[in-house]
Length: 294
Image (cartoon, rainbow, N blue to C red; front, side, top):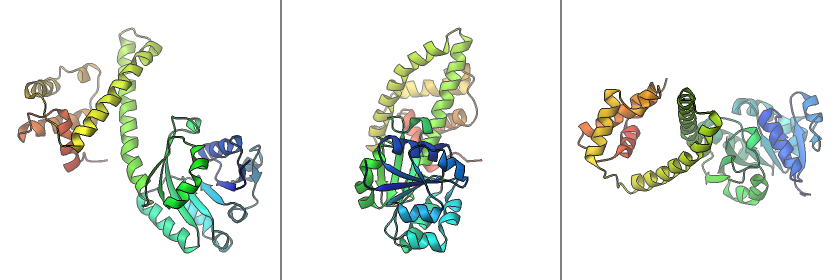
């Protein structure tokens, strides 16, 4: 059993899952929720009478609330401020980079140490390889608590002492996830229309996932080293196929921003003399001229 007590503030789907995981891993867990009966129903954890009582009794407090504003409203009281001295505040609520930096400054002004975290995964993924948490802030505190935090996400990553870094990185990662997830669903619908069962499709897609991972690693290396030379004829053919409406993307029924952005970036690459490069060259155009966000 851990000799240090961990507080969990907020017992929504993610907060409750975090508390249950910490209890299951043998930690001494104190919990608080606005609706007190929720905290009393969490077996193995000790309910706190108030947020201030939670902060005063815990060595580290994990916050899982709807946002940074609510966190500040709950903690910015005279009792909580007095209890924060010497406590590690681990903020796992969703927020912007500037909010994380502001909350670190506020926590430090009350003698607390601060870590901001961005959770990449679902409550069901906690404690598995499918869960990643990005952390930024106090490096020494992360190193000290890394073993405990790994119980939540074996794939945890410390991304730097800037507490705004996790939010800055998680945004593009979620864009990648939902784009890939959308492509999976589109492809599954196409397979279904062709008479292929979803389980058979998903089983075969595992192999394509490995190919995607290999392609990502290859593109990462070549983009980082500016080695994007490719077959001009092949790239031109891909471009004609996309613009001409005869591509696999069309047959899958994919249109909208993702398709338009790729075609536009590839067109720019060819028009601006980059026709001897492969589609990874589009990366540079996206970086220079990101697609407009609604």
